[in-house]
Image: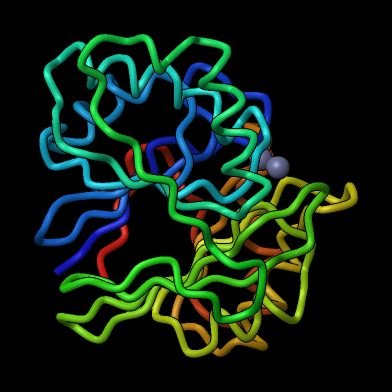
Length: 251
Ligand SMILES: [Zn+2]
Ligand SMILES: [Zn+2]
């Protein structure tokens, strides 16, 4: 069994109940972070995840709401005694910026800092992110303001599939990536360029024939939640829910 925990669900502007969107993906061998915002150490603990079992970080794209927690996470786990290497997966452009960001903190001078292994993900449809005993994760470039990835996560133990849009406007690549998934987690930041609305996310879910749609990366506004769910459901026709912080998705 594997689970994704939403460690945050907000778009760029967080509030007291919604951190910026990032996810933890837990399998039997440990867990990976997908993006890293907010106060990652605190959230990881609140989600009941064992920090010792952190085994990688996937960065979907280099926007502050998706990467702002990385320096403090790396510093925290170093201070807590991590020695094992940590793979970081991302597009070439993203890894370059990740390195540049960490250079500002003179991370190479941190004594005894554990090795960080940058793993380049090709900017092409079907590119492999990682393949191990728990998961096979593939990706595709999606339509955002900067180079960005959507993900398809296959649970090799159960055969279940979960797809995650990252930040994107509705696009055919996301339909292909999510094809037949049990769960599609799709962003709904709005109608500005490079993002999606609930009805457009519903259309992607319909075209991809997914089992269930989870809406995420939204501007918190409780009076709109029911309407968003209705808008997506009206197009998709299947089950729709709005992700909340610490919501869990088993697949
Ligand atoms: Zn974002
Ligand atoms: Zn973004």
